Picture 1 (cartoon, rainbow over the protein chains, first blue to last red):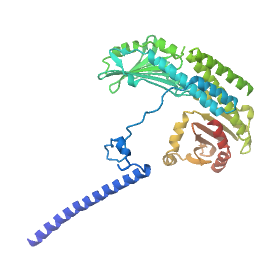
Picture 2 (tube, each protein chain N blue to C red):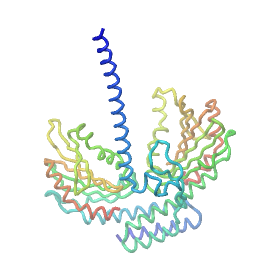
Picture 3 (cartoon, rainbow over the protein chains, first blue to last red):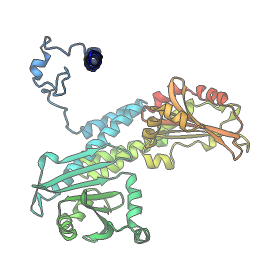
Picture 4 (cartoon, one colour):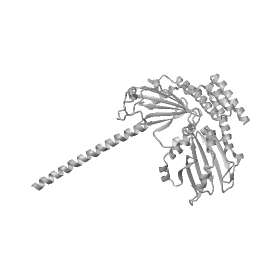
Length: 262
Length: 188
């Protein structure tokens, strides 16, 4: 009996010791982890980590993850005025004459960026305000350009109403568009691929491809001109016809002309 | 050079007048042309600093190119020089700016351990301090037939392609003999 009691006591002690040891190890791990994080924080940003510096007071919101880095809550963002085209053309001229070709190149790229941004904004302004009962979302309007090269000019607009949404992206003068054009205009390839979730279609006389997936809805891609593509993404559109009706609201000839396409 | 300067001036003048007239697409087209002229001029400047002989192979300057397919597609600087025309040995140097291949090569360079274990014919090396990708080319008997060395810098890519019997050390010596600093300064 006495022996049984001893065994039971020993077993209980072992269990509690293991638990205690685990607790200690866990605590050590947590402490080590915290010390490590603080050391990294300190190394990365000597002024962060404590509220003593006062930098966090202006920032206010601490990250919910428990880190001590301040969140940015101030700052006016970047000046997004497009580059001055005339000024950059003049810079390019002077740099080239001075034999400073690298600077001439930079100025020309800036001038092209300025021109492309103007073209993009012009296209954006020409797009309809509403499409199939969906209103444009001003904050999502976007014109991006790399100035020169294989990325080209991209114009983006979003229309939305509740959970129904239409995204429009117009890409122009991108070298990879040539490949897209070849792919889309090759009817033989399209008819022999055997895919059921996409098919060829026409929007205002322009040949394109419409795709559907349960996850992302309808996607309609139509090349316009030599190097431009317009893509509509329709989320929660009831049918293919509804999607086509939405695309037909857009003035494709007008967009093509503004992009200088033939 | 004179002709390039004239073309540049002409393109720039056309761009200026098109922009003033509100013809943005024409302005863009002419700016593109002016940029091509600048790229060609930079290309010729780079050709001047490239070695006239490489590993005993003389440059075939009549085949020098500053515009071409790659330049047209990527829309940037393109320099091409050939060394040697013998059947058993030859080399080419290509420099392409704004290359879409840069991102892919940089991705490989940033994970050297994976690449070094995955492909025995490819390794990451340093040439004049620049991380570069070295590819060994082989025949069906796994005998070395040449090496391709790709050195990315800023948004450009220099490719040294050597065909013929050459060791890895010799190939790296060739890479190290190139005037990288001068090329980079001109191409930036």
